[in-house]
Image (cartoon, rainbow, N blue to C red; front, top):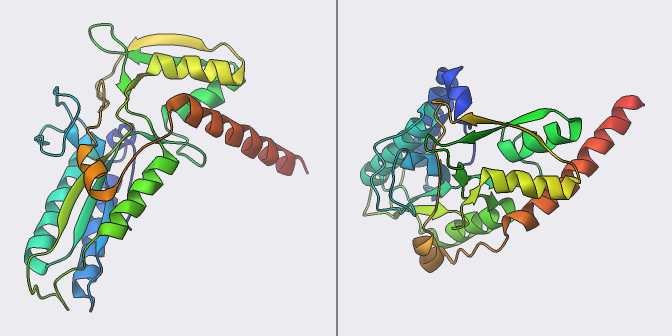
Length: 262
């Protein structure tokens, strides 16, 4: 299971090289080692919903075109899918790519909106909420970490063996791409309302137009394929998931404060 990557859409504008190094060169390193192994492993890796880029048709399906990325991050993840297909075709590596949709929950990334919104609301700082050009709300298909883990395990459990050995292909090998989302896009404005309710604090909000920094207006996963082939069934709605996250956050950072005061 290959999850390592340089994640995040906006940081790519500051440090593009880190995305190429991790998401393309790093992935090729992993595939090179895998293809030369005897026996070759089957590999499941993290792609991203960002590959759908500027697509307007929703929900996003695995058969949709993905050649209009909106960020360098998306472009490197799309490149990863193309590179994986090449290693599958030439070397017989069994490969499964998982397109994650806005994963959130305990131990999440501090650069994601739900995380720093929580931090800033608690500190009384103003949060910036972006809106689309038509003044509509930006929406995301938020997917709780436990559901994503179940999808990862489903992909691992159903992965067929690679057909190559020591860098030589002996027959066609499995190649799969799946969406792992929640299928229920939620406006970011609703995310903020849920956090206000859970934190028992009113957020100070500043509404701004969505900047051209790689963010897209919406994401929405079609998970029919993952449901039928790997038994993927997301079960956690956003309010339930955020309740678990807030409980973790309050406990983790109160413990951190106590340690720093010793």
